[in-house]
Length: 134
Image (cartoon, rainbow, N blue to C red; front, side, top):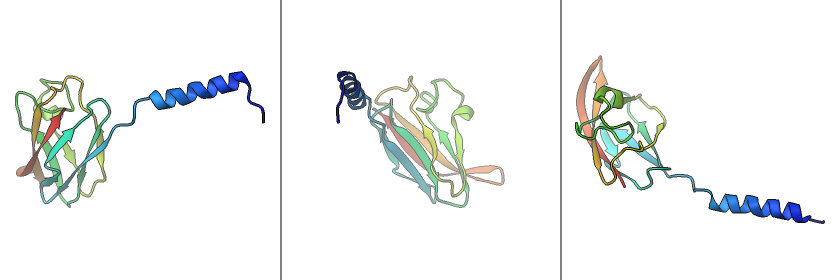
């Protein structure tokens, strides 16, 4: 088998691009069972590539509500109204997401959220958790 100089150069370029390309981010999962988040404190190490998923392992709908009025959610732009940054996680739903950290999220900030149970249009607090962006 004969490999031409051009073919070798092209293969070298493709190999170099594959090695230099950014590795895919981590797939981070927050599982909700009985109103409790696991893990309760999620650390996002790579804001550019990590993807966060929320999974509901119960028969009720949960609503994730960001509680810090100054910082809101790490997934939306700062000063976004609370109702725009909250989201529902449906019963027995597989991984809901991905959610990526917004470029304007503050590094080192701990973003807190409440897990609210939604029944018949009424919500009640079931648990809480935090997301820390590095």
